[in-house]
Length: 256
Image (cartoon, rainbow, N blue to C red; front, side):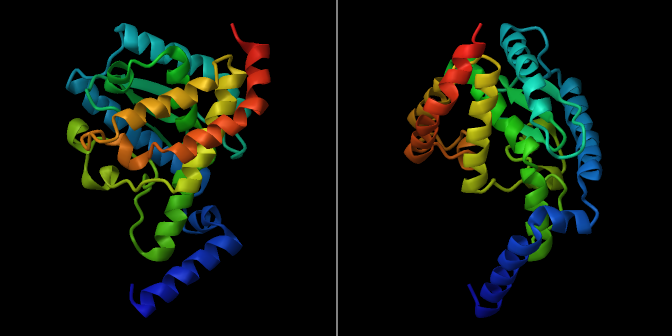
């Protein structure tokens, strides 16, 4: 890194610390309402393209399970929304061997069937994945990424934080697919928020551990794109395990 770039990076970090990257995004016109509206438009294009390729799965047992879990988590995600803007939560299941899931700003979500079927996820484990992605949207991690990108001059894709979208599969433009991984801190925040959501909805939080243990076992497979954006490691597993005394009583009260 050159001295000039180093100073610019330090300036960026300082501005984000003082004003907040979300505030920077607001200042350049990517307020929550505008960002969510733009994401909804792009999400519609993704779904329409997938439908034209007969990839949207609405009838399989996998799709039914994902939607059941999503609908059970949604009321708790709505209660957890502190953005000041109501989310229009939507879930689509896309038939693909890819092991991935993602959420766009405003609660527009996709789960690939490969994530469920190749990892043989239980309903509780599906809840861990869905809750994790819901938390990325609730904490507006994409918006924070935009603020950071505006400051660093990397770019201004409004979907910079909607990581894991398979542009080749869906046939999207490069801008939509040019997603950057969330930071380690954001991933940890999404883990914690997801565990709380699943406990509230009556899903066993211990399943969040088993999901990442399964991901660890397939970590050597570089074809699995979620591993580049959701690093499965022992530190994350241990962090979730430390949360269990907090969330297990919530689960016990709400389990069905």
